[in-house]
Image (cartoon, rainbow, N blue to C red; front, side, top):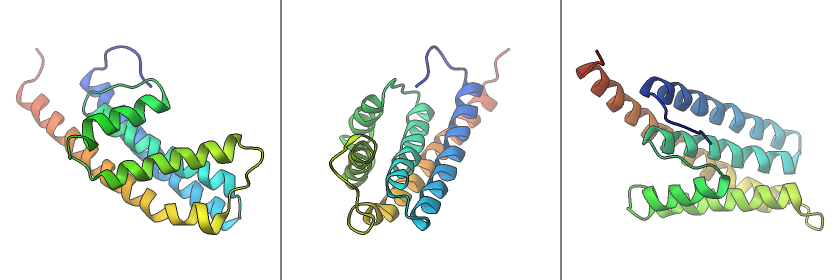
Length: 151
């Protein structure tokens, strides 16, 4: 993900960028579904969620350097502590598994109706939830910075 210390300004810029990228990527998934690009849709749904979850982690000053690291950190910090409902962890894991299947399994063709479409709305819910949490965290960070500016 990100190496080295981030300034609060850098953190804010990265979080905003990742959230924008999450929604842009989600829209790519919808376009792929409309064109019956099933594997591409699965890939884009996962990455949309990944960008949003990674933005959330960064907003809370957590770092992970791999996809599995992001999934594990999300679970450890937000799901195990009941900050976020575990159903969102299940959704994130299903999206990851679907992406791996679509990208790497030569003997399994993803089915749009039974495998991809059922995850479209849960993916959007996950993205919306973690995006709002990340934005709230950034507002709190910005308010803190404004109260105690660096000299």
